[in-house]
Amino acid sequence: MNILVFEFITGGGLCNQDFPDSLLEEGSIMMKALVEYLLRLNDVQLYVPLDRRLNANDRLPSSDRLHIIEIAEGKTTEDILSGLLADCDAVWPVAPESDHILSAICTSVEEQNQILLSSSSQATDLTGDKYITYSRLNHFEIPVVPTTRFSDRREAIDGEWVLKPVDGVGCEGIYIIRNQSEFQQALQAVENRTEYIIQPYITGISLSLS
Image 1: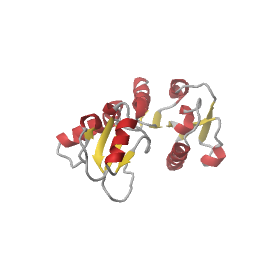
Image 2 (image 1 turned 180 degrees about the horizontal axis):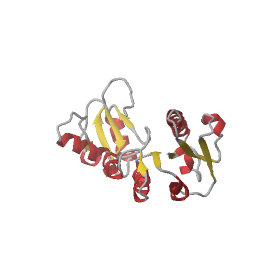
Image 3 (image 1 turned 135 degrees about the vertical axis):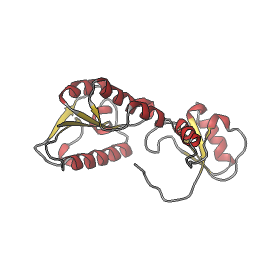
Image 4 (image 1 turned 45 degrees about the horizontal axis):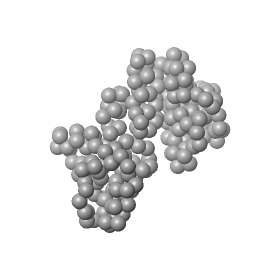
């Protein structure tokens, strides 16, 4: 089986702009872990697009079943996928939910009738929006952190709060609000308040659940 592993940050999704340092590191870690795991499977050939600015020897294991495709400047995500999908049986995408990037990739794979090794584009669209996800979980009485659209929250607040975009990647665009001054600063900083949610800050261990 030929599997395309497309990690957006390292795989050319940002080939026309500078890398955000934190996202590059996170993307590299996820890509390497996924490739190493898949290489444990027999009869699998892996195809991995890699931004021309990155050194495969620094980021990927060596294997005759691993095929690196260098992505040059000027390519779009559509260019990258259209050139690789036809030669692969399955695709494992890793990409930001922001701007519907991940759901668009999933849709492209589905339209080509390839095996999608992730959630469907429909599921990705739903869970890519934090407020819609909250509403769906709350509807089915699944415990979830109380969530309000920031545009609906104008009154003074007490305690600590987290303000975050409804979609996004990593911790980009997140504000911690501890007092009224920071609340007012957030009001001024966030121009499109309908694209943000606010939640009470919950103390605990920072974990990523997959």
